[in-house]
Length: 317
Image (cartoon, rainbow, N blue to C red; front, side, top):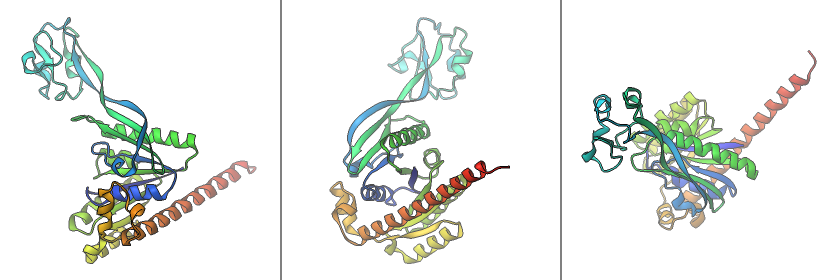
């Protein structure tokens, strides 16, 4: 099984639009939307939910009213200001004090130092994750609750669940729409992937953030390909991005021109390859073919390596 992760150093480069087109072109695959803080891939793939589960990703302090004697020790020690007088909040009312769940970080200091052992950490539901049937396969996606954290943990859970599902269904391609930037959810999306496709735009900020996320790929040992979206807006910057890509050992795969058909497709809730045969659609199809060729080459190399290992293990000493 191979996993292609589409990422970008910044938001707004067209990463999700490209992922949707690749999902349509791949016919049957498992698609994962790892941008769990602001998921939007479902807007272009018309998913129909077939399963959903709550995501428990953290713990919050809870004060047992019957045991609390209102000494205030927890409030003195809490560095996040999460322990307040009970008239400050309406939830978790106790004998004098209450826990603000939005401020609590679940560090456990109050639990360790409560003289009455009246505080405990309880698991919290941080959001929900979904399995949906979409146009050309299946979509694994999720959404964190407002103010919730542990997006990296949720991304890891999504990828693991999607991989197990793909094996059961006999599907060989995982197509992941990664979050923008270089933070924890991006690292969780990239780790162990077969290939990364970096989508950037021909601007100064696009070049800067492209180089940051490319260096992240190099640190994680994930081979990277580069695509410049809306490339005809600044051809000089495209050349600089191409040079930077080659210099860092990433293959420069190609460009996608600015095309109003992309906007029209998104307004209709479709990918550009479904509604247009214009310049952007043709470029995306060429990029898809190049990606599939690269994945096939890596698969052949992996199989050759396995054969070599088996031969060595079977040979006499």
